[in-house]
Image 1: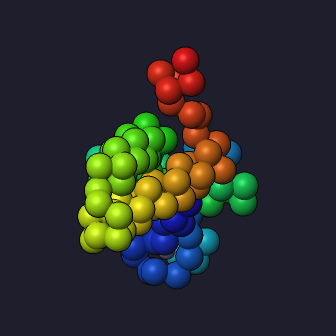
Image 2: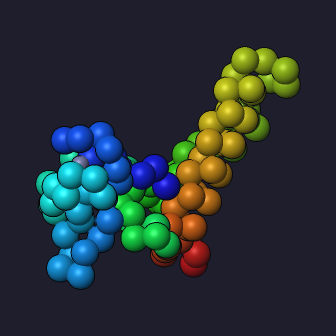
Length: 112
Ligand SMILES: [Zn+2]
């Protein structure tokens, strides 16, 4: 999980409040998750310390993993394409593990 740091003071991450809002640990700026602007395929989450962050969605990571596997199988051994596919595979596995550690569910259609 990548922790979201307060853009106002750049001093601290946001921590969850009982109200469901998030508060900067330094300047006390309040943030609602509706105000977050995340890239497609990225979702917000909260770590075990109550800090707000984001991870790549599990479905996105799984799709990247599958694409990298196919590309790796089709690439000639020792080529740039093979190394690129392996790098993308490792990145997708890392993203998937981070999302699962953050508590996101494994994509339902993949488990069937
Ligand atoms: Zn702040």
